Image (cartoon, rainbow, N blue to C red; front, top):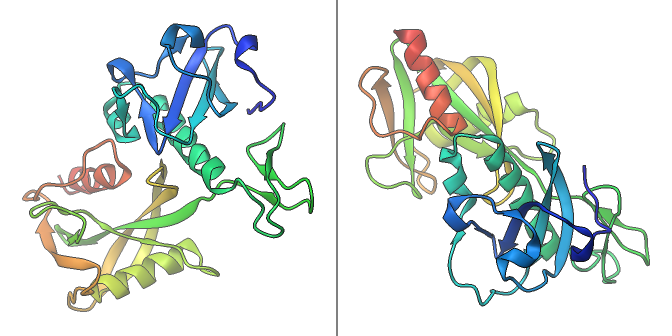
Length: 262
């Protein structure tokens, strides 16, 4: 649910997702709850409702420029460890929509200033009628098993010793399954089969939707794509290197295969 015809005077108390330049304001590493006047922040540039929790509104307050309050600005990643998973999901929604507002101030067709649609998360051009929605970039994750081993890789953005399953963005005109097969072949030169859907997770860095698949090894030797993969290999499921945490979809998928092997 979204409501954009909001003003601070009409809000009694709420959960506040305060976003500035991609960071969340998280005093005590928690989403603040209460009345806006209690926080000592200036009036936000944009305000809208992005959901509810326990019958209390969840409001997004957006600042485009850095606030004078220097503390408590953190990445939404810190909420991955929160005991209530809904906070990361709402934070993902908030940061993605805040980025959408920042990058869609003007119409891409005629250049006129865009306005929030009152009943949905969208922007509308009052001059030409062009409507835009928040960008979502689908990305496939592929956990490939070969007997008692799993194929793990380290990309350029990962520190030495940290490995994960393969990932890549879906291209125009592709199915998810086609993207999974293509990405694996491109990144490590391996052919796969028997794809099974594992699950999905919003990933607001900046606007991805991760969709996981399990797959079986079919053929091919590992040949790393030079501009993407630093190293890759087959790891025994009971002798794994450092892998993503269980709060991530990739981490859960790896651990599922471990349990299946046990």
